Length: 116
Length: 111
Image (cartoon, rainbow over all chains, first blue to last red):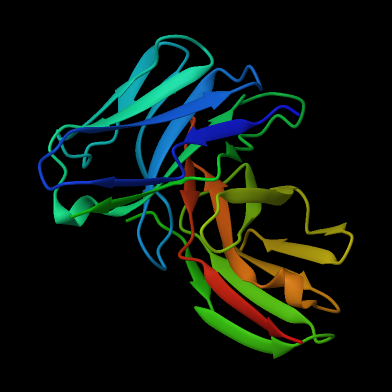
């Protein structure tokens, strides 16, 4: 089945130790998103790619970086995780203007990051 | 902030009862979506309603949209314990590829 896959599901890192989260998709969607979601809150968009074009949100800390080497994969790098970066990280894809002519997003199951 | 507001923040009901959650948004929209999120999982798209539609049904889901009041409601009829989840509305951020999510409603359905 076509889907969005995030690895790992759970990630534990140490304060200040770089960590990379990965996302892959088989939907062939041209847009990929990274969200941060803290407990009982809405997802907060960090950045997204439209094809190779990177779009950073104004309030995304420099500590967060992203790479999209090809259509199928996208990575979230946290260069120096702090305690406040502990959260669920969600990857999503979409193909705006598709059959529904709307931005329906398809989410992975998420990676829960713990920072010790 | 452009973030939409949802109410109630939390809702607890018995199986078989109906659940209604409301969403208010701030900007003009092309469409509004509802997503569901089970605990510890990603969001799943449930239903989309366009700005020129007033009501839409999908199975036990009924969505209404009032663009004059910038509000929408999601009704889940004959709820089941498996409907326990958080529900988010989302509007398109015009001229971008982004969605604006509401604050979410946590629904608990007791058997």
